[in-house]
Length: 574
Image (tube, rainbow, N blue to C red):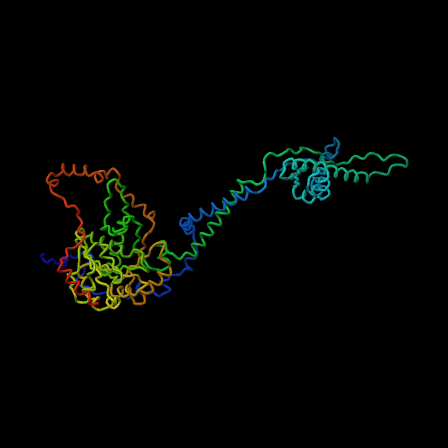
């Protein structure tokens, strides 16, 4: 078998990021030299909340608010349903003054009756009346109990008195209300008659006392009726009160959760708390699942019969690519480290897709797997694993021997991590590593997939010899303390922080990109191979006659058996 070599990548035409020669740029102030308080931001400045902040809390915790409100409403309704039903009956009476046909006397009597009605209210609420009613009706209630079940009201500027009695038994409520009016009228008559008799001269001896007519009397006006519907519990009103109280409690608990929640969710929150720019935000994309981690910088074609995916992720990548271009127009970054606070925040996928997006724009890009402990770049790009940086740094191979390419992205080169060494930190901080990155930067833009910042120091060492680092923040997962410590670690070595990148932002934040999605009718040709073949045959018979490859994507660079043996023999060097 003929010996084959790796596809060697030579110097390529410079792109917009190109520069004659490269040397790692050391920061002189700027974001990388911020002090710890400046990096951590001031939460006191963000303590005051505006209307937009309250609305954000409601949008973030709407499920929590809804659940608690429903629970409180159901509990209030259930409590109301299990309470005993109470019926109410009301009887009315009116205070009348005995007068004449004289208008002045009538007006005076009406004024007197209104004044007496207020006085009789105290009499109606007395224990004397209650005990008499209890004895006359024969209800199994004491006078004290009846006082708690009877309400006496006198409407304003009227001589009317209203007696409302409540009881679990509707008949009992009706009997008590009527008996209360009768007993109150008798007590009023006795007192008014006694007062009038006291003002009369004594009758002569041997003559009967004259009959005294009381000037004021209480006359029953409207007897009580047997109620048919309970007045308590009012389930509808109770449910309404429960919903209002539940909503207040739910929103208060949501505010408390928001205060205690240390996770970062929005770009504005990152910028306000840490004074570090957010160079891009990337949405959740369902296409980045399983083995498919690279979109190539362009929206993937929809499968036949499926709905087209939103181009939000690809557009966000292009926006990130543009933002990196304008970070420093005079001296744009050539070596960019992509890292995160902890693992699982998507840094490797972002590094691969950012490099693909830059390569799709025509810029020569080299992806370097700087994670020597857990390399993943080779698997993401589906190239030959086990060869890369460690082979170059130990002198086992030249750079061109281990650089690999994919057929769908000719401007993109991949430099894997190689075999796992026992001393990753020493290799990454070596002078040979710095020279390697500088030589790669002369060929194109270098994107380094670095390990997380908090578990190991490898990413910090790479950021020091690079032009800057991009720290990936996963929305809803990365905490404020984690990002504070990560940025502080970079600052300690005087490395440059190019900015942060907010990953896994909810897709609803990118709904505007649906404007650029293709219409369903325009996808008929892509979803119907027969229509596409017929169209191609009509447009170009010669083109239809040419055979097409079964898979246009080259997944690996050709590697010979000799080449494999060459690297396998040096496996014992570590």
